[in-house]
View 1 (cartoon, rainbow, N blue to C red):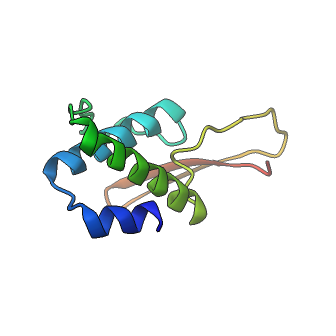
View 2: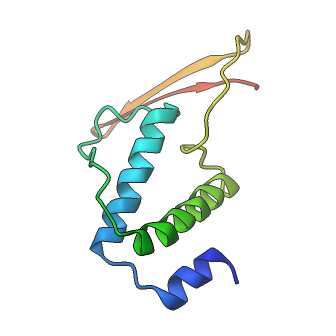
Length: 106
């Protein structure tokens, strides 16, 4: 039985679990610096959970990381930036939003 099915069939996710997962996700995304999160208003501290809740949440978070990478969302992965001659900086603004990115052929 996978972690996800163990988590959903035996444990209900409550507010403390969500806060724990959110804090882990934001901390990892900030650490890996894949995306600019400067305007993110949330930067929560990791809540203290008892071990019997923390272990399944940590396993569930590993599944979240795997699924995010599977669908091409690499926000939780460490990027190995290399010098590349074929880099294009992209900036887009409109309707009250701005986006910045770098396209490369790595």
